[in-house]
Image 1 (tube, one colour):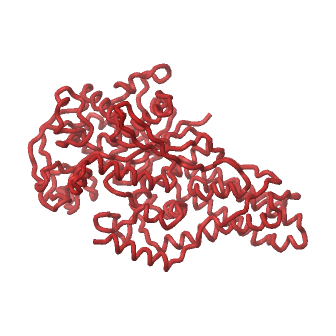
Image 2 (cartoon, rainbow, N blue to C red):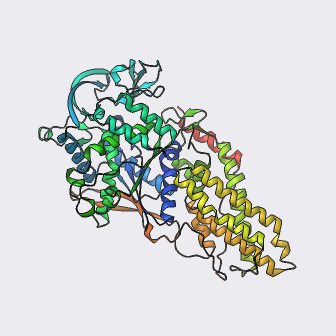
Image 3 (cartoon, helix red, strand yellow):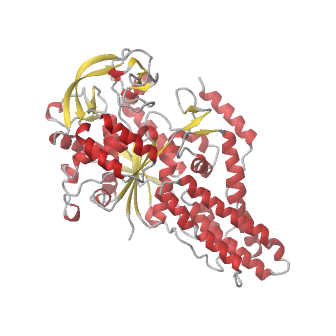
Length: 601
């Protein structure tokens, strides 16, 4: 029986298109992981959506003279399209502006408030001197009072890791207009993080399987926990669910508090949309379920400290968790099993930044290159464990020298020769010791690659799959079946059978990484059905009449399995075509120059 695996993917912010640095952190790694577990036969629930509240969206709306909802609608569609074309297999990719999300967020807020985990405090709020709007902590920069770092943010210093408040910064300034913020006394609601400090420390200490940077950063962070404000003086956000705020529109639950709740609300939405409203409990109130969170390193604290604190406080109470019956009664919502945080993908040695023109948008890449080419690069050369600099020259080299020359070449010469000479999977004679050894080595990839993926070592897994493809290429070069067939057709058929069998196994090993080309190869080998089928958008209408689009797919119909396959002798092959395109470096450089010319100010 399969395991229940929650794949919780960081919510992309809906104030602009996403660049390849974003999907290097939250997108491609999470999809590799989800596809692998689906092939394993596990019950996967992969959820996320566009994060649509907060000041940045109101600022963008003011600038364009439109409503925040219009901004959120526009970029939710653009981001959803990008993720669809990149092949990210969400069970539900939704939005934080749904009635369902509001209800779940308000239930958690109200439950934490009633249990004493949310406090009211007077505080100095930061406001823009030019617009009068609340400034998000991350939109305020200044000098860290602890280490002297000049670009510390209003919530923490990325240099020394200390938690900060905007008022703590030396010479604070707004990142929007460069002016000092105006601080005003205002009442806000605070999540009482210090009350969870001991529980967090014990829990994080036990997570020895986390990536070292995630675990050490989190343990350091909880040493100086302070209550954290979870409301802002805004008119755009989730309403505060207390009677005195029923008719007020001047204060809302702030974006960072409600965005992480989206993992739960999206799961609840998924269950309702499929007509099984309690199905989400199989992941959230199942002690044996495992939760994996995927994000860039700048979001670690929200997933390793803040969201777990919310879950610890909510426990098994409230309208949603508290209504469980049977085996799930009084079972607390499950904490993260692993937090898979990537480092930064940079370009020209700089962090990606749309405002500074240091950016390559996902849709720009996918309009020119196959999605599997981008997915391969981000898996083999992405920022898994350290910041990685993206260059077009390296993108071209990886595509041409590895994806095309190794895996693509093996598939092309194998299928082309077999299709031309046999038309179907040839019947082998007795296999030699070398034939058996090669098959056993390639089939061993299900264990070695699978173990690496389980541990979120995606670069190691795809490197191993590519190594195995190289071994089969070497086998063909040594056996030379294109020559053997002139004297011994039976032996040539055996060699080609061994190569085809290995290609069939490698197809599955590459599927989590390269779903589009793997599906095409699946068809070339004469199979029907999907090992990596198409995704789809579905429109759902909530009871108050508004509708929203959800990215999803019919994954239960996929037939692939993470285990050695048996390619039937005599199965008719379909006419093959090259899986990948070789790129011209000069053409790519010219496109880069044109593209960057349109992006740089």
